[in-house]
Length: 344
Image (cartoon, rainbow, N blue to C red; front, side, top):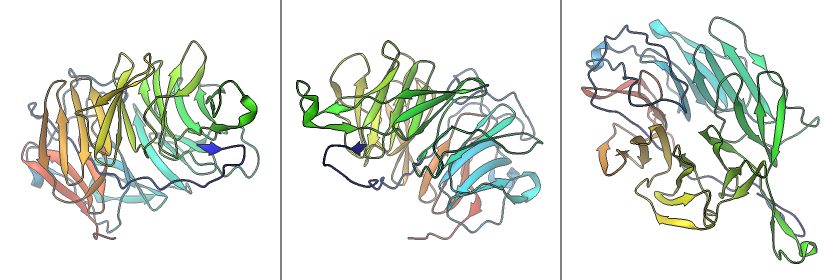
């Protein structure tokens, strides 16, 4: 949120994020490679291919704190560490990707996406080279795509500045964020202009969390993102259900919201600071050093083997990364696959 009319400020610091995930479905064989499902379209019919025990997993010698993960399988992932993107490959290989200032990455079938500072948006087909997609921002633009985007080729959504940018496979379209006026009856009294950072959701049910914490929902009838009431509290993530309702996560708490109702929906069981939605009844959420599973009705907590800051539960493996490196959840429990020092 940039503040106009005599209010200024920088980016607010987001809360430290943690997350992890899992389920009890029968494990597929470790070498199975089922078709991947786009992360926002995954559902209960796509099984996880979990290794039977920790000894069956690939490990990497990687002593850096990690902040984001995009999993391709139980034996391959892309991870972000201190604004650098690394490929953890089969056989224990580690490759630094030729991108600077990376904030987030995610996987689509056969493609890895990365976004970051100064309008960075790039895609890499498996076996190919990185391709940068120019947002058409002014030279020297310093706004961040702070926490990433969603979607695959033909429908990619990322936040940058005062807009969410949508790529249809050929070109970009900018969807503006609507300002909040101090006095709706007197526009000259000043306004708050809201930036867009991380974009979540699927289809037209998209939300974006802003740098100062509020959540912005997409209103197709206005073709704009507007503020969801009651969410201005350093929001660190959002969960969006298929009907457009959801919850904002912050500081270990959560508020439910309904995009079509101009009020918040009170406390939500989706409390935490980072979430990974596999389906409306299969959501995994970080809550400090435990992981919370929401099955659509109840929550269940489980401990993690360290302090982790991001999770990816969309494909055939379940990864968590953070201060303690990387871990994969198997039917035998959480297994460290890359150990990092617990840096402050």
